[in-house]
Length: 329
Ligand SMILES: [Mn+2]
Image 1 (tube, helix red, strand yellow):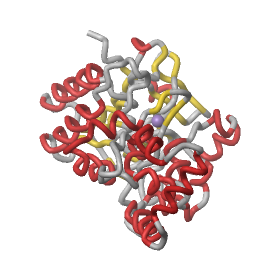
Image 2 (tube, rainbow, N blue to C red):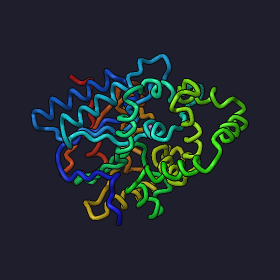
Image 3 (cartoon, rainbow, N blue to C red):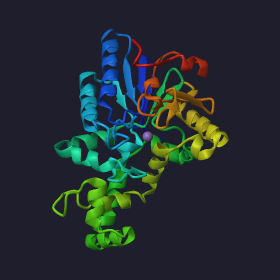
Image 4 (cartoon, rainbow, N blue to C red):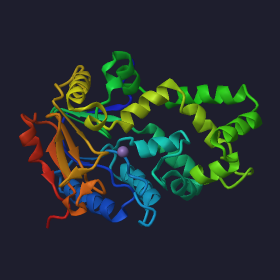
């Protein structure tokens, strides 16, 4: 088997898990500083962010997405091996220049515009991010949850050892083999809006002279690549809301079995990505949904998880005892 480059194995050490912060700098700083204090004291070894560090939910919010990403990159340098960032769907779309919107809210252009000179370093950081952590406690961690596609062995193998550059090569080949101007025109006909307008709207492309001018087009072709679609399914899964509780339980168990390969049996999955009343919710008995930021309803109920990665967790009830609030004194 190809080495798993997207699964981090943590046999031991206390691990703090923080989910979707979506550009909220004050909250990010609270979690970061709490980790630094506990790490320096020697009682917390790992800090795990489960992705979606970026994109404020509402246009009127103070969006410090880039500041958070740059800070977490620095944090990895300051505390080598201690800080893990998993890829979220909101980061994934920037790797592939794919627009992301929800209702009237378009997420991608503000971050694209903010990137500026940091663009290459931030996007290459996103490309290195793993998708799963598995621990000696039998607790695995990912951005969104289990996906039906991962019940297929070949798909799981492909995701656990994922190579973005294979997709890049295929898309570049398509664009090389075609007349770009015609592709842009085709896109405009399909969208019913001029290409420039869409590129500005979704990716903050400033005009024809912008070196990113063709990235919207590039993203369209990336979006049709089977490996891209597989990763999309994994990072965008809506879990029980998408599959129903019964089927979701089956997909969840299948994923945990696959993550147990040549390691401790993985019994529980921890993820964020979706709203959770009072900051945490149990789904299909073995999935603990944690909301450390905007997904907590109400926001003051936000939770993070702090557990010993070396000590098997016997039950969901025990796992839930490791939930904490950063707002506690
Ligand atoms: Mn998400």
